[in-house]
Image (cartoon, rainbow, N blue to C red; front, side):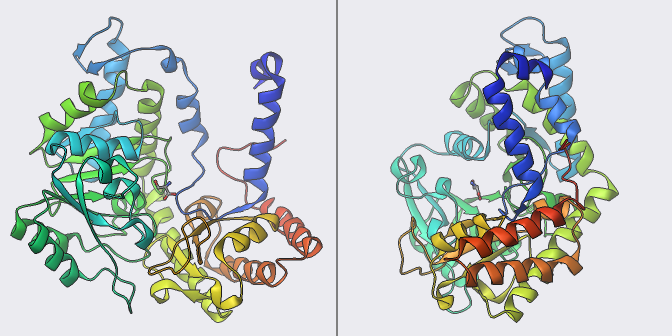
Amino acid sequence: MHSLQATDPEIHDLIRKEERRQASTIRLIPSENYASRAVMEATGSVLTNKYSEGYAGKRYYEGQEFIDQIEEIAIARAKALFGAQHANVQPYSGSPANQAVYVALLVPGDTVMGLSLPFGGHLTHGWKVNFSGIQYRAVQYEVHPETHRIDLDQVADLARRERPKIIFAGGTAYPRIWDFEGFGRIASEVGAVLVADIAHISGLVASGVHPHPFPHAPIVTTTTHKTLRGPRGGMILSDGTYAKQIDRAVFPGLQGGPHNHTTAAIAVALKEAATEEFRQYSRQIVANARALAAALLERGFRLISGGTDNHLILIDVTPRGINGKPAARALQKAGIECNYNTIPFDPRKPFDPSGLRIGTPAITSRGLLEGHMAQIADWMDRALRACEDDEKLAAIREEIAEFCTDFPAPGIRVE
Ligand code: DSN
């Protein structure tokens, strides 16, 4: 990054520091990953210079001969990887992708249904402070009070009572399999459109490690940077039924020019995700999460729903005499990055909740295997026992930095 260094040493140095931070810590935030060098090269290309409002063959600016090809390649790869009839690769990220679905299918005031945010849903599935809960009539399902799993009977009762036009299946802190087939049956019964938001699990779905939302959900939304390991972006995939409405909602309904550099990087990530190597990576994410969950249980951690089927684990840390926020801070000091999170029926506030959310996509990208998970659980256990002791936390951080040198982070060249 010589040009950046010469033009803006301040920003250059901060990026270098962030690079070293990402390389020398154990990153357990389940929505984060390490994009490949190839993905980042596409993101950092001249495509950022170009405006392309519209869609291939129908743009409002000249000079689209290469941009059109790039977007068409991204669309073709998305359709092939997910078995979709239609793909829109222009949404700027997951929230705009979901917003486009609202604009495509609903008018303000219509009823939508989704998993409540504090129970593991997403802001855009009808949470009260989000556009989805402000402009639409949102009804929210929760998880079962004992199993902490989604209870399809409860979902069906709510859907029959409230008759939503859209039902969202998907979330950000749900460690179990989504039964898209079961959701599809409920949606059909009440005349709702099922939207599967697979942002967290799209890499797992693409690899066949998590059940597929097609044909149960006609519309599937996703980000591209989580388990899919692409650039920060979004996509809407569908069975084609609502293709025109979706395209119109993204542009001109909500967005202007697509981020062509992101579109190209999405195309690269989709090519990477279509390989056997990526399928193996996805299987390893889940194997690592299961091994990490088992190692945490052995050390007395309380896991929501008792474990995991996917890439993430939700921990109630309060039985250890600590809350989520100070626990996340202590782990951060020890070189383990995660986020504090609400747990189902959390008696505490979202900004100071009872839980921690962790996951294995990023560490699996570095090549960590099941055998390494006991070590991570051990560091977490030690860090939470020593949460007031900065010296002990710093010592763990050093051990972790040393450990990380054996597992180079994809996309990062640390000098
Ligand atoms: N911010 C994402 C996550 O961390 O799960 C959801 O949008």
